[in-house]
Amino acid sequence: MDLLNINKLCTIAEDDHDKKILQGLDLVIKPGEIHVIMGPNGSGKSTLANTIFASPRYIVTGGSIKLCGEDITNLSTDQIAKKGVFMSFQTPEEIPGISLAQFLKTTKHSITGEKPNLYKFTTEVEKTMTELNMKYEYVNREFNVGFSGGEKKKNEILQMLLLNPKLAILDETDSGLDVDAIKIVSRGINMYKNDDNAVLIITHNTKILENLKVDRVHVLVDGKIVKSGDSSLAREIEDNGYSKYIK
Image (cartoon, rainbow, N blue to C red; front, side, top):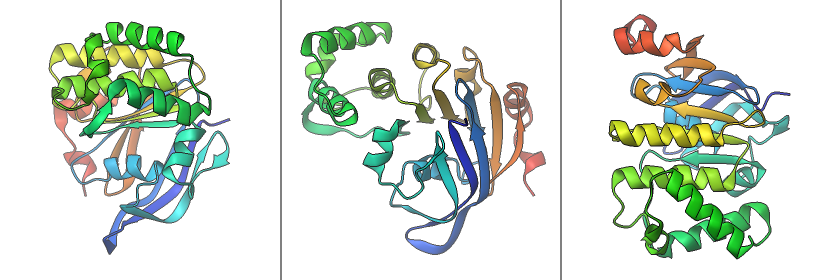
């Protein structure tokens, strides 16, 4: 069974119904795969990620989104998260007044429906933060408040590893990161990846792909996937840009 099956997906902007963004997009991801979406600015990459996660900024006007055979097109964001979808953001939010530890425990409880064993969960958090080269003292700080850009992105990967979703959507998680931080993010993706889950990476930067076994690369232009290939397609884009794919 396909883990993610998107069929002829069409969207418009919530604040401008004449603005068509995704225009009949098709995408299939199977369990155990890593897929990459690349494309010029304004092509619909982030719209795709946000539409899968039911952002109110976009309205689905056609097509469907299925997760493990179940139609999730019209579910709410929290329902989709509980079905096993995780999304990291280009610009992670800060939440004053809520510590990282509180956020992680509450999120885990909300997704699983069970309160995590405090000792086991704390041990898991500490171990995972060490592997991501994060200071454990950050668990007592307000969520992302005062974090560097790199620490915020590592925090996204930390959440992914602790929640262990079926599908992880990483929307430019590598943007603004130096080489060392990109390597750590790639390490986190490899720690998460197994034969039963899948990853959808949206990126402009092929550096994050160097340490990953990428199954498919897709070029998105004007709301449609116009080219798909193996990892060599990402290198072609890096060398030659998108000009041959733009009408």
